Length: 267
Image 1 (cartoon, one colour):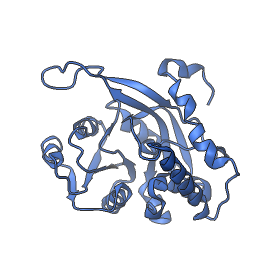
Image 2 (cartoon, rainbow, N blue to C red):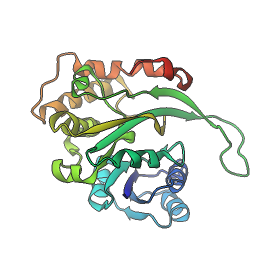
Image 3 (tube, one colour):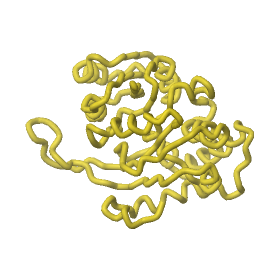
Image 4 (tube, rainbow, N blue to C red):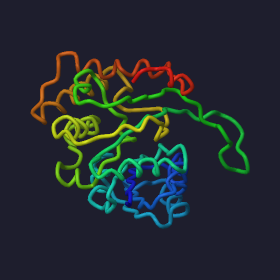
């Protein structure tokens, strides 16, 4: 089995080195596809230095999901994962765990948990990153999946969502009309509308730096809610009246979780 990892980036020089290093450290066969939006900083120099074997496309695009769609069209791996330039895999065996799940030919997608992290201010060792320079801000514990959970505001963290290429070929790529809700819409399409067979890996698969456009302001949150509702509508589905508002509210407990407490918490 081969895995294609798609990384969309634009002026990501400050963070992309960690992303690239974490992909290069993986112990399974993979192809790394870098879709760059014509960066004006040193992003491409860093990519060519750290990942000279990656497939690189650099040209203007229409946003991150347009870049992801370009990567999907280029991907040749049986399984596809998406890792943005400010995200990284926490361990060298992360993708080996993903590959083990897909050894079951009936599984069409899988997902896991996600840590939001922030970089501590401090010393560097040997000109590089010091050990343990990231601390956890939020812990997104996904829990097991049922299609009904989406009606109660559930969503898997998209950076941990790995999908067989054949699913994209059958059901399509990201809908650019959904804006920041394009990842939510594609999960509704795959998991709720088409009921693809999905597995949960109860471990942290991705670490993500804090930030996010949809929650940057109240107006952004209102716009995101509109797009979330549209994500149901374009699939011919109708959420409960409370579904869209429960989705951001489900994030609140993530600020209080810590990894050492998760073994006592229910899914």
